[in-house]
Structures are given as C-alpha cells and as structure tokens.
Image 1 (cartoon, each protein chain N blue to C red):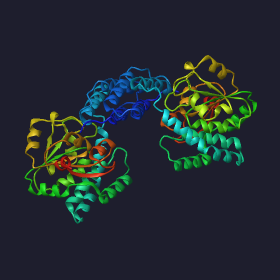
Image 2 (cartoon, each protein chain N blue to C red; image 1 turned 180 degrees about the vertical axis):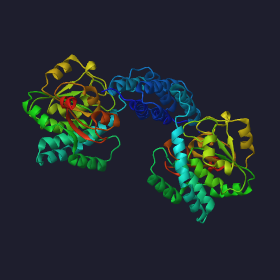
Image 3 (spheres, rainbow over the protein chains, first blue to last red; image 1 turned 120 degrees about the horizontal axis):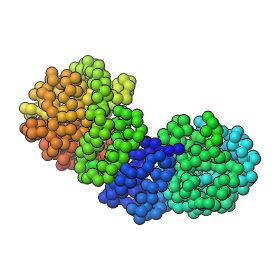
Image 4 (cartoon, chains in turn purple, orange; image 1 turned 135 degrees about the vertical axis):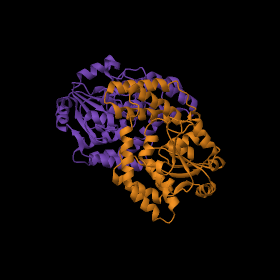
Length: 285
Length: 285
C-alpha cells in the first residue's frame, strides 16, 4: 500500500518523538525537523509508508549520530515480555484452542507499547485481545495453509513482541524461519533482539537484509528472497510489514492490530481492530 | 511566546485539514504539503506560532486559489451561536454575578468547534465551563481595571465566538472597541463576521490591520496601535492573541481555554484549563 496524505504530518510527529529520545538540545532537534522537512518536500510519495520511514529514520540516525535510538526501549520491552512468558505459556496450555490463543497473544504482542505501558495496561490489553472479535479472520485459510506447509517463514515486527511470537512459533510443528531486520530501525526486532527473546531455541533466525520499518522486498537479501519465494506459509506481523507486502500474491497471512487510521482505512476496518488476513483473500474481496 | 517544536508537526496537520476543506484533489494537496514543507525547512522558528501560521495559511490560500477556505464554516458558526444568544442572555440576566457569567460564556465561545460540534456537545461544553474552576484567575485585577477604565479594547478571536463576545461587551458600560482581523485567516473573525454577529450595535468595530491568526503588533495598523496604546483595559480572546501578546507589559487580560499543549505549557497549566489572566501578573509570577 502507498503512503497516505495523513502520513505526512505523522513523519514529523515520529521525528520529534525519536530525536527527543536521544537529545534535549532543542536547536539540534529543530535542525533535524527542518532537514526532514526539506527531504519530504522532494521525496516521491507513491511508495509505502515504510519506505519513507526508512529515509526519515536514516536521517535521524545520521544527524543525531545515534544509530539505534530505541536500544534501551527495546531491551526493556524484551525483559518485560519475558517476565510474562510463563503466564502466557500456561494460558495457551490451558486453552481449548491452543493455536488461536497463541495467534491472539502474538497480536497482543504487536500492540504493546512497552515504552510507556504499565503492567496493569498490559494485562488489560491482553484480556481485551483474548476476547476481541477479529475484524478480518481468514482462520480457515490459515489453518489449511499451515496444515499443508512444509516450511513456515515468520516475518517479525517489534522487539518485545518477539517473545509473544515465540509462543506462536512453539505451537507450529514445522520448521520455522524467523526473519528480522538487518539493522536497527525504530523498535523493530533485529537478530540481537530475537536472540534475547529466545527465538534461536525454536526457529532459525534469518536477517531479511532489509533496514526499513517494514519488509520491503526490493531491499531484502537474496537469501531472504529465496526463503520467501519457497515458503508454503508466510506469517507477517504488524503494520510495517503489511504496508510492504499488502499487494503480494503469495501465501502471506497478516497478523496485526490496526494502530493508525491509514492502515485501518486500507484494510477497510476500524482503528484498533485485530486482523488475521490472507493476502490473496484480501485481493479477491 | 515563541513557537515550540511541537508546533512543527501541527502546521502539517493544519495544512492537511484546511486544504481538504477546499479540494479533494490528492495530488494538489500533496503538492501543497510539499511546498509548506520546503517553506518550513528555512523559516525562522524564534517567532510566535501565529506568525508562522500566517505564512502557512497565506501559502494555502495562494496555492488553492481560495482566499477564505473557512467562509462557510464561519457563517455556520455565527448562525449556531446566534440561535443560542437568547438562552445565554437569560442565563446572564438570572445569574448572581452577571459579569463573571458573561466572562465564562465568552470563554465557552472560544472553545466551541462549531464546524464539527453537535448542539448536544455545545450544551455540555457550556455547562462544563459555567462550573469549571479557573486554572488562573486574576478576576480581582480585572474588576479593578474595568472599574477604572474609560475605554476598553476587545481583541476578537474566532467567528461564532463573536456572538459570545457580544454578551460580554453588553455587560461593559464603557465604550468598547471590538478589534477584528484585517483579512480572513483560518476561522478568525473579520469585520464581516462581527457585523453578522451584531457587534456593531454594542461596540465600535475596528480592523487591527493584522492578517495573522493572532494579533501580532508589528503587523497592526497605526489606527489600531493608537487604540491599543491608549486603552485602559485590553481584553484578548483565545490562544492566537495570547501567543502574540503574552510578553506585553500592558493592561491586557487573556480570556481563553487552553486547547493545545504548547500554550498550556507556556501558561504552566493543564490542557483544557480556563484562564482569566492579567499579562502583567503573569510576568511577575
């Protein structure tokens, strides 16, 4: 999906939020806002939001000199999620439909704002998503694809969410390749984050080669593309990966909560909806 | 007060909102966002938000070819406010403290978003403000200044709010000059709006000469500055005028509700607070 006009102000909100995480020098922050402003005045907008985000966050890193502004936030997210792991594991083990509970938990992991959320909010969010109706549910297609799959490719989204992904990976009996970003971008999971989350115990961790906040195929490595093209089932987590892969004619299933109106509008659902969507079904509907 | 870094994304939100009011041509809107982006990449930021807003809205008018994008919204606001006038008048007449009730109503007029608000919301907002505690109240200073004043200068803010201003002007026994913007800017009141609201029956309507969304003195006419410098009491309505006049050492009283965090922070109050503040007291505190 292409960027929307509503993404335009949002890139400045994101620039401000991220630069404030690494500096309190207001002159420096203004300078960065102005440079982003100059860049966005000429950038093509008929690309995915993730592609523009890649350019914006790359500028922020270059101008602040901080390659990974979200390092501490990401580590904190992973530790908080790990502390919840045993409870979540028991929840799955005691549920009537283990796989669907694990899918719901992995979506819950996608919405957690570990940077600011308290544990109370976390508990409440988990409870909500465990009982919330799916706005789009292609669960029948998903179960069928999973049943017939020899290999599963799982494209990660955020650090912390990785621990919730692990719970879902553990419910899948086939070999799973867990694809992460090549370099730090926002709070997206890298190999380091996947390792901290214990994904190496249950899957093969692979870099996608991509450094955008969404798995844009033209930026991916040949190794990843080979895995992508041969996978029988691809699980794509979160909005950024949806932005990058929404036009694909592949066995891609999007698991996400719609967290902004641009993605919600593209999926024709309300903001705050939870989604288990088959890319090919979406194109047919 | 100077613009804050938080104003930066907000100018793009405002550009998007306003351009969408006059065109649905997405390419045109993107072009305007990009031109605003280029302009903001070089504009000095150590000025008031109102001064930057003046530049941004002037670009929007030039690029859309629509001088007054808010014309219809403003007329609708005034008509809705006029329909409430009799009820508000009775409320003042039956209240124990007519002047303070009129002040509260004029602040309520400042918060009404007539463009989107339903009459139910309007009634609720009025009820809230009639009983809400002032976060800053220099009412004693205001009453003293009013008692001793020979002339009162009342600097208007939005169209529609003008009708609520009229209720307050009617409680003032001294001659009142009601100052409006020279040209349309956002939904700020012009002479035409003041006339539609019946201000000519109770005051002398004067253009400030200013075409910014705040009464920036360097853009005002000599006629206005003469009235400003000789006024014994100046009532300044709304955030834009506060931005422009907050550093003044004059008998200026700000009547407003804080509608954004930038102004709230400058006044050291919460967003959503109501304020009756003496400019000179603010400087001392």
